[in-house]
Length: 299
Image 1 (cartoon, rainbow, N blue to C red):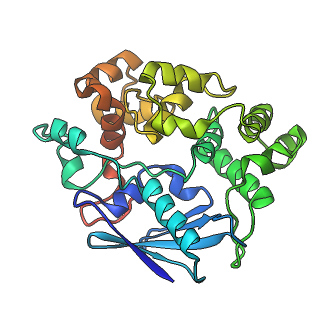
Image 2 (image 1 turned 60 degrees about the horizontal axis):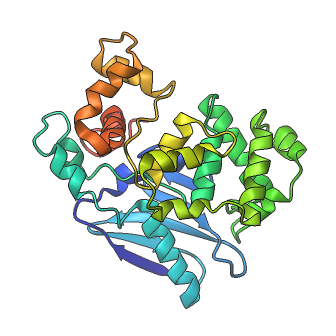
């Protein structure tokens, strides 16, 4: 079955797919040669399904081996629009950078949309798995979670586990099987609170709270500090925070400080002119070279 979605003229499938590391974490897979983004979606009907997203001029083609019901197809379309940020209004950001020599490439190349999961819960779990560790450990933890708890597709892939599935597991599962270390208690507690309805993390997408108050709400979740909260904010459409970490700081030093370590305050000053878009400007700036001039991935 094949579905299509029209895309904005300013949209780049490649820049969005490779916008950050989520494309390497299941249930995402990215084929950088064919430029196909694979994703497992659990529609709640029978088995989860595997989608293959591919680029076409002004549209996204979604291919699945299974014929979908009308309800399932509608969910697939909603989830793909959400993941690729197709409904995000980037015009304010693009207007802001239009006359900036170092940043106008972003609009010209259709960059700025950051890939996200279909749910805030998944993004939050994955962000928790990036804290205070090497990327290789993040990959191991997420693969462990998906492999052990995700519902299986007909082709053997697995969906991201639901809060209920995660809540049902003992803390020892996260410690011994997922190898989450100190995060084990945090993952267990987050899943329980979401599954029980104690917290509604999906409401962050439409929250009317000012960004600073929304950030404080995020940080009430154990395991979420400034870095994680500021990056989750980007995935719900708030770009005030920079999300500084052990990858960002060296990249800034390399590109803007002759390889010397720069203070966090200096980094903030560098992007301050972009105001509420400063976090997105920083991220685009430091990932500019992830695609070469012909659109091929460099990592």
